[in-house]
Length: 193
Length: 447
Figure (cartoon, each protein chain N blue to C red):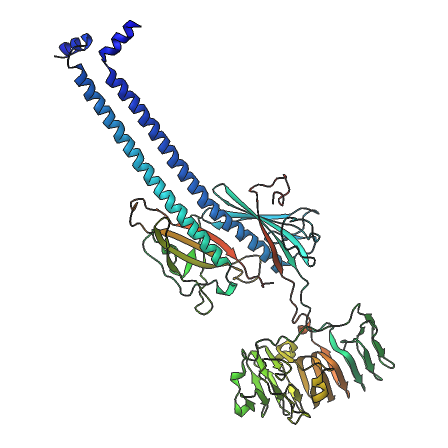
């Protein structure tokens, strides 16, 4: 059988076009499938990038807003509590009421949070939405005391840490942000002296 | 040529050739898409790191500014996390983490001349101790670099510029006064009598002393006139601790009048009265407490004080805005720490129409054999300490001050730095620099 087919192929006889077409169709199908796979992966990557990008700029705008506040106003209005899920930004709040502001360091540095129901103006969590990208999410705010060991006292400055998450709903929901975008800065009392 | 046209016309194998071409195009498309997506992802990561690096650089500027304010480096020093003294023209630098892979490095100069360094920053001040702070924020290799100029004006001097007894216009101390090593000072005249003993005479330019018969260590010529800082009374008319007092204590809340009816021990805090009379009683702070008592001025003198105006001539006794410590009045601070009882009298300018109508504001303490442990700070007032064989431990600053009759005065060093505040460095400009300095070894360059 194979010998006869080979003989026919060598001779360029009839039926050859059909086989060629079949092989060509398979090859094109494989190529197109591969292209779709690449396109899907690329779309996933681009969507994740867009989420990261929008989240980073939400964080930038929020940190600039907070740094412009009066020093006394930079405090949480209520004390947030620990969350059990490791994907929740509140997972890094410890039972003692401290917040682990460096989540990759060992040992884990954690400082007391600044909570002032009277003068504080920062709610712990608020939602955001971006009309252009049609994305939305949450901003988690943490304010902790900075203790400069070389200066007397334990409340030398305030560290502001923002965790910006993107809600995984709507188009591109599958492309989750595995981690929130974290933005940190430090603010001081300009009158301290 | 003919053979080629024949072979082409046979079309054998052409499908595979076309498919190969299509696959090549698909591969190129896929490669382009992958490249574009990867580039987009990298750009986004870089953008995110850039945002975080900027926040980290801001943190570096803030910490450098804070440490300058708290550690008060001398002009030829700067700060890392401690005061440091590098070679002239060199900076102090330190790198610290902000967390989650972000860090900052800041560079602080020694004092720079006004108008030099940080040249491109706007708002160049002409005064104050100026320094340039440059901070880089770094996240995963992405660098943002910021620069600010800070300027620290001279600090606030202590309430008492001399360790003892200051009368801006006049000091009178006669009849066997013993100041036990305290200083006397004035902008115009110190008038002493026989057998007065004190440490140094401190005179402003043009001032003089009738020092005949007095014993003292020498004269210090102050290069400029003595000035006193304003009475720190702001907001105490509403934010005060007056609520601990009641009618039984002689306190009338509606007029903030305290005419003491018995000895008082006050808890820590600020008190604001429109007038106060010791009524011959004793005032003490609670153990470990520090109290500040402000005698406010009538509202026509200090708008917003909420205090009544005096009539012309005044009929209220004591007058609104005055402090009287009549016979047998005393102030006893635990351990004699004068800083624990601070008396501030706002008064009214001694040459104003108020003084014409009501007389010059007067603070009076008169007692036999008693003790006063306190700061008396009354820049607009005549302060009378007329005590027979009494003692005072503390310090006094007034417009005119009088000591009489065998009184003993002792300076209390707890007042030495009271009211003193260092100058804080304020940010005067902000600039984002190129990520790397343009001159090696000059961290301020490229801004």
